[in-house]
Image (cartoon, rainbow, N blue to C red; front, side):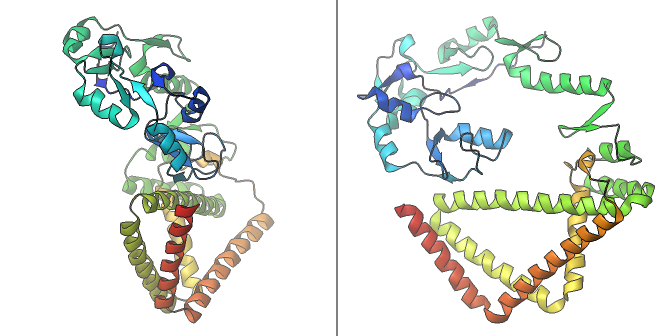
Length: 373
């Protein structure tokens, strides 16, 4: 049996039974669809306007998906409507320490201050047994705590709730290793590949090491598969493009949230970044021709893919024939060529000063429209 690792925290989940509200039908509008408890410090989805606890949606985005749990579109955060804010302000809530003797009924805004500091029956929630314990009884509870247990999906052993995730990850790893599979950074990679690539064990294991080790391992792996190096480089390029799009989309979501939270500061920083980016691109366009720009961009994407710890070689498409490879390469080349042409066209007709003014006006218009709609 593992030794106890007890910690205590402030449980923010508010059950329906603690809520006092005039219209019970309105209570359904104030329930988080993730934890199924009363909304706490809520935010909403830009697309579907569904509301979530701030902590719940942040945990969802960090551990599960970047999409909204309900509408499945890319999640974009926005503040809750004034109607929901008014509804929350009208609610009264029993203190969570009611069972210990506290009879206070608090407003939504006063609840946190009361339960953490002002209540005469201060309490914490135990991470092992998930019971609410009075602070003065914590020492005694640590000697008698019986942790909640659950059954592992792999070995059917009973595991403490706080150790369950760690145990299941380790248990699944052992099960896959016994079946001759590899796991790299949580990604399952099969050791038996249909691509006939040599040295997969070398490249898979190098994902756990630093950037320099990954780079030299990739060079050695490419040398072992010279006959298919053109397909490998094409797949690395595709992986790099996909990773760039994913990170750029994530960055836009964070910038959008940042704009809502600190409008003036975000506005100033975005203008500065826009000016720096414009001057940098203008300098590159003047100092390099299209061929060198395309070569540098492709090389950078391939290099970033080679060093990516999450690179999944088992997803590489190695069954392209010569004609398909040629057509795909030409398509990528012309796509980059057209993109560079449009960028050069932009700098030819629009000065950096004019572009910055238009960018600033676009941000101001966006903030104005979102505030009013």
